[in-house]
Image 1 (cartoon, rainbow, N blue to C red):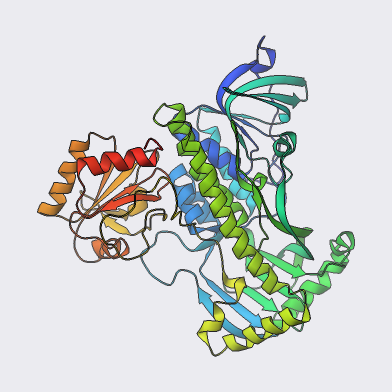
Image 2: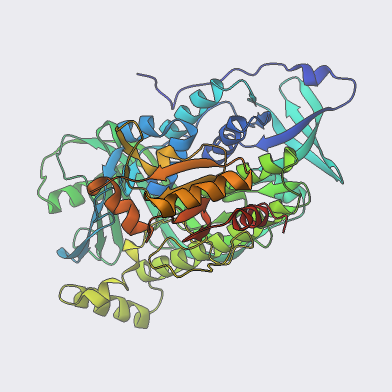
Length: 545
């Protein structure tokens, strides 16, 4: 088994370093974390050559981001590495919330059947990065350069010129577009004179990865003010390789250096295990870190030819698993737009929609993350009294559970107000509004085999879902043919359970058509489209209208 934490990647001298004039590349991605790797793979699958620069030569240390949401797994499926991550990760849907030592309620994040992917998997970040690096290595259009640190940038009308520092000195690169995926301490953000603004939370938390022999259910457990850690909160959930992640709230006055020491961590973990009936169970401490956090973002994610994604653009508290998930969804949003612009299929203005859509998503994530953090870490006696009263109510009253923010976890943002959406002309019910990420469902293929709806969508093109059979469905197919658009068409037909869930989730009738963007967000839908409807919607989704 590969030890991804100890992997070191070789620096290799590139011909660009010896070029008389800076070599030009369509896209340079800066930062080979989960976001930069996702973006590079996505672009390569769309036949866009990518240079990916990383200032280091290793993967992340410790578990770091571990909760990867259903929507993120669906993105990884499209990139060709989702199966591997789900097979390795620990799948879970159920969470339990405790007040003092009493369970006050449980929640199920995926209570309905008919989804290929679980609500979440827990998988250490170094595995996610390792699998993405291996996927990138299989794609010849990705040029991944380790120990290449960007130390300067000069913006021009037709791109940007980067100064790159290597173990053998500096060289310069030209890029049509630069994607800044270089993390919360983004050098590119600083070099452009930009900053992320928001709120810093005055609290400290200890994260510890522990291995132990105890067999606990695969579920997320969250305690408010437990007897084994009074006045604070604790989170426990399982990772791959029999490893467990524990988060202890420490308070603002805690010494981050002292709290990382094993002699400080061990009694905290011992008290937790004893309280849940695992007295005497032996454990080992792996990686540990003490952190503070902020909810903040850049004002604008696009600055000329530089586009910011992931932690370089926005940051949230870890409560709700919104950091890495929203970053991967940034990349999912940006890749198809960059590819369309570079291919001449869309104007440069399409990239403005990346900024507006993902700024909106960042605001939603920050809002929910801030609420969760305020609930978990009340900073006044009044707010603590309110929180404790809500927790008492949750035992008997369902309405109170919606106020417990520890249960609000990452979901895909519905881009309701996106400029790329075509407003409904027909009446629809349900959640699949223009701007929503398409819901998965079982489908039966033309050859009689069964599969999953999102797997049937094209990895790089717009997809048209055509529901039902009969005359109405045939008329919709004729309209698609008459439009002369290069759409990938998926028939959603069949009887019984094969079609029932998809039909229900999309409020479909025979002939209903949904147009999905390459990132699987709905951009238009009709009961009975015309060729003109389809052409207008596609122009709208490519910012041509």
